[in-house]
Image (cartoon, rainbow, N blue to C red; front, side, top):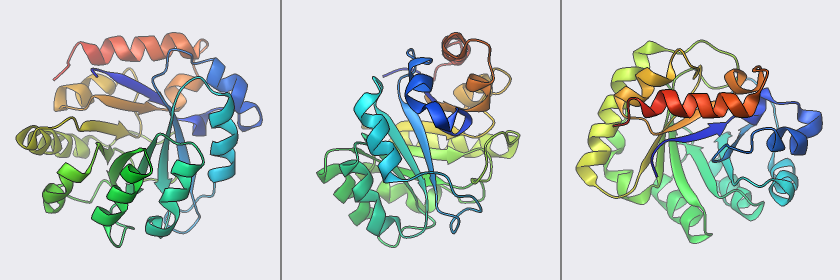
Length: 220
């Protein structure tokens, strides 16, 4: 697939999600941050909002579930219209079963890791997944500073993914901007979530294109 840019709607105007999606027509996906005030200390949006946006947006929806008990709730996000669903491995009780259920319902299954969670214990899960998300901030809030300490983990994740083969995307989320995206791409990421960097720009769609160009200089 090459480089993909998935702007985080968390940084957009929640009162005008359809208009905001239209402002980033060049985006590959719309990244929707679902937070439950339990797994992370913030409450954002849920399946009804995703269902509403999926009906009107041109781009497919990438749902990032920062929630407790994704085993129970993640499948309903596929039903709501998300075409990629990411659960946090720290919250999943049966990640293999969950990944298989997401895939069986017709979406891409993705596993997210918080900054302190190592990738190595989950190597055997890789064939069950379509994407791995390495968080480059502590999940919960937009606008945080990129954590450089996560770069070696992106590299290790890329090495493991390459070892297993298959078409598994490697996504990064947190503090991704023109200043940090090249380092992430160099480390091996190919899908980039950017919130504030995109929606605080004068021309969000031009920023999507610029981020893509910067990342493309260091494609793995």
